[in-house]
Image (cartoon, rainbow, N blue to C red):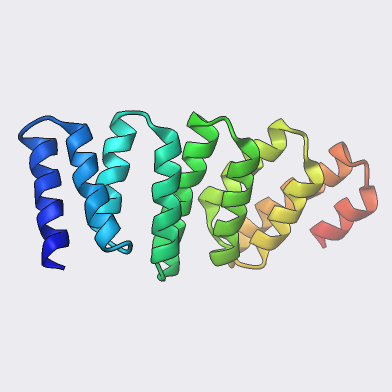
Length: 173
């Protein structure tokens, strides 16, 4: 552990004082090779790769983080960053969909994931998928005004997009 700490310190020196990000990356990778659960090294690598716009390497760092983290909320934070990276920088809408669905598997009430899926599914006119996400989300929220809003959105999709008036009425009851 002491050696890992030294590699982290060396990486920080390369990054902040010597302005040598590639050398810093090497040091942080050395720390990870000794302790593959070192979150400090992973965060540092994410930061440096983001500066370099090295999206593929960040994906690998996120996978390492997700395999290391056990706390659901912390995993959700990483999943959100991963999904944004997939949709904004890698143009991988399906990857982002999968990631946001993982968020909802951990926290079905996550509004950010629902809104992101709403945008992706709406743009792709994937109305069945969108109503499925809304249904999952409804089971996790309790605010009656918010629940009513989601039900109205679902009814509009059933009536206007899917031409299923019976389901539109059913969802409002």
